[in-house]
Image (cartoon, rainbow, N blue to C red; front, side):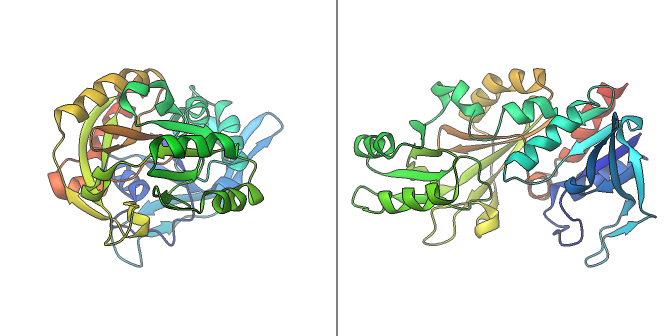
Length: 311
């Protein structure tokens, strides 16, 4: 198949952790032809959806992990698959790329389905499953947020469309910084904030469960660094081997059919204790760590699902 990958710059990635690199590596091993471009090179040109980029080959060599062919402009409708793999923030730039890719999908299979990526951002899709999630409020109004804190005491406050643990604050019952943080966030953004009851189980880890076409492929545990609330690996969280619990499987059984129906082939959900906190559809990570711990080749499972859809 002809496969285009829309991703952030490939040069600085960590080839031992980057999920997009592992997907590209597996595609190449299966004989698929790769083309790479960054999201700023995506365009609408007189009825065509085009991208300016390069034929790509990858290799697992530190500091020499990719080769690019000659730069060219391609019509993405001539490809079999386009991967939507740039990282958030989920802003209007990101959203615009989903609108453009909508115009070639499903004749060209865009993974994950851009319409539902746009309508299922990480921290909003969980609202459809209140029975699985901790107490949550989404608001910009300080009065609403303050009332939530007064009710639940110990809370987590974070940007609604953030990622990688950036801007995540824990406010304990005695903390008096809510107003200052609210001023800070609303001073540079018009977006609401999301507030959740703090889950003490996070000290034992924030589990990342990988689903492929709605089915659980396995999980890793991300343990916060000493003195840190956030467990994201971007901010020092330590990945550990972990098994799926019956509660994890119950969560997957509940949300999996919806993800499959909406074309979300590769999804990473976050589970703290018994509670679902996020459903990551934009650019989920963790498949390399899972492969190292469990020997599960999630990249192969993903490509098998894609190849079946294309067939």
